[in-house]
Length: 329
Image (cartoon, helix red, strand yellow):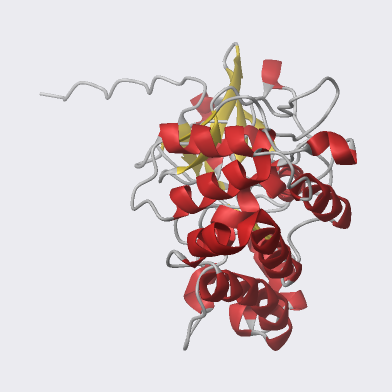
């Protein structure tokens, strides 16, 4: 007795498939009997070369064993099958190669460490001068002016803020006649000393950022300004959000920037091998830029759009409501 034929696979958009020649791919569009499939590891000379039109009746495709991939899960939508990017995208292997050309010893390269360590020294300076309750004591004994000077001196050790952002922040902290500066520092020190900050704690801190005297510099608080101090206080728990940098880092990979956390991760110094840090994952290396989608507690604009803002036509500024939760973009 002959056995019944195996049922034909059910193809649908977002299904991950595997091709014997092109490897792992994702169905991004279906037109009749033709599948439009975006392949993760295909290099491109022209935009869209990684997308192939395949008739599954030829029997070349099979459904992938695992229906999740850190890169394919974050590909922007192909509306009506159209390629959502205008320049050839780079594969993870190509980007890793570029990074290694710039830094031959990867994360142990002297040039990389020189750039990275200056930022790490800013964290150490914060811990030494303001950490473990010292910031609150300085505020109580010497007032906001002394704390502002210390905070700005710490920030200058890093390279995270653009000079215009730094000057705007300096001016916003300079109005010591109001209660805004004192309230900001009280909120900052309260936040970073909490073991597990909640959404409410983050809301209070961002409200204090917005209440600084920004009118003095005719500017608005940006995400880097709003997040740099908690980040320097404890980079293991907080992130520095840089939406524009993240967008630029995500673009060569054809990743959806709305699914990327805007951050520069600054891990503690490591001794020994660092090659394991280049393992394939949702990490985009563009010179000093690292962006990855995280599922831990991160700073999230809960009403975020790709270009959230406080004011009209202002890009990447601090929106009115933020929280600590899983980043969804």
